[in-house]
Image: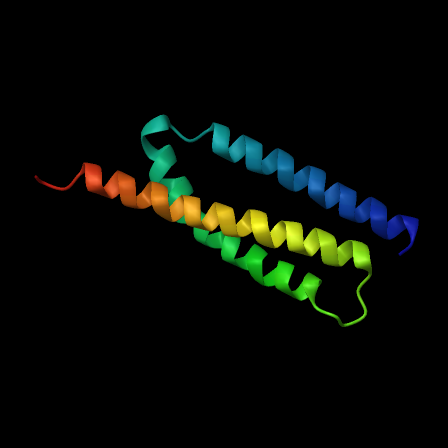
Length: 95
């Protein structure tokens, strides 16, 4: 990997982090939980990418460990998002 590739990757990371923060901070609190719990399904894409990074097709040991960490964190995010959604929906059901 060349230094210019690394600079591009860091640029994408910083830009995505900034845009994500700006978008989330603009959401009103009443919409935050439904939007965030629904968007946790997007972490499924992270799970697929982490599985690809964990395979044995010539990737380095570092990328395998980072892929495994991403897999664990994305799985926790998806399960937590569905738990929050389920809890939120139970609040609106009639007793």
